[in-house]
Amino acid sequence: MKLVTYAADGAQRVGAVVDGRVVDVVYDAGAGSQPMLEFLSAGALGMEAARANLVEVQHHWQPEAHRALECITLLAPIPRPGKIVAIGRNYADH
Image (cartoon, rainbow, N blue to C red; front, side):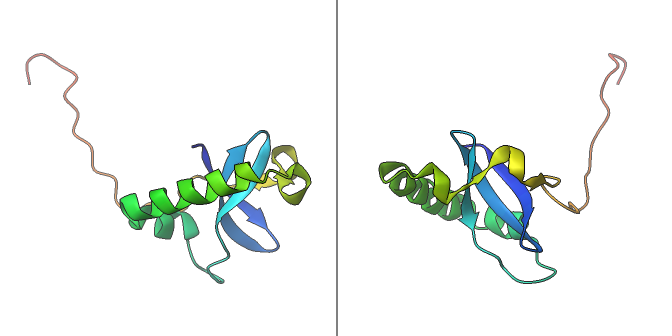
């Protein structure tokens, strides 16, 4: 499943790319929300629900019912990520 964060109707949305179209995975969660972070925080249950939704959409596939990938504005996959911690261990003498 290829997930994207995109702008539509003045809000951030989470979608999955299917045959060059974007299928909504999470509906508008309100102004100022970060739907991708909310989706990811749901963990395995959220992913399973998204997969089940996509299977249903593909079973009754109507491409014109979904936005074309080239007609949307893609946003950063995870807008404003939290703290990122990394350890550099590039050298053998560490």
